[in-house]
Amino acid sequence: MLFFTRSRFRLSSWAVTAGLMATAAALANPVEAPSLAEYLSAICSAAFRSAPPEEARFLSENVSAMTRMMTGMEIKPSGDVDQDFAAMMIPHHQGAMDMAQAELRHGHNEQLRRIAQEIIVTQQQEIAAMRLALGQPLPPSVAAPDQPSDLWEGGGTTRNVHTHEATPTMNVHKEP
Image 1: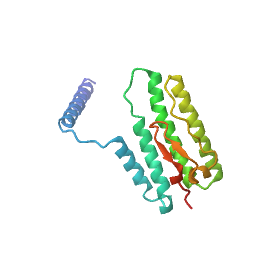
Image 2: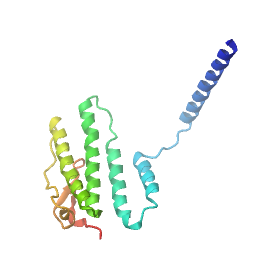
Image 3: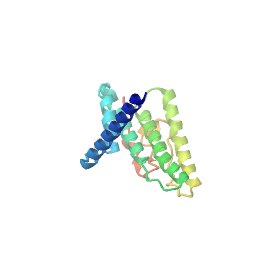
Image 4: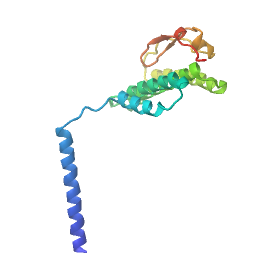
């Protein structure tokens, strides 16, 4: 039994030593890691390569939305849990809205398109509620699309509630 314990100790010592050596080597030779946006884009792009060409624009918009969402959720902790929660959830909700808009532009299922409209409205409301709870100013009000046709018939503008950038909806059109 004593031999087994000593062997186990030696094996553990070797594992710890090997781990420390690998860590030291990695720190001594830092490699430029891809950004989170590059990483996400590469993952999604690889997965979508086999998609039919008519779905390419929809998938591209979704990759962009997910990338913006994930990079927006990368925050430096402030020490205030509530502030950090809102700082991460607001880009998360904006990502859901961006993906819902892609569904409205490219989707054909009326039930899913209605759900996408509801997502846009409810996520905007939740973002506003989070900002108000923290005493933050609200972005300027813009009309939410109340019909899928508003997105491609030039129904005004949509506003990214995280960056406050306005996008004219007249440049958005439904895919055939």
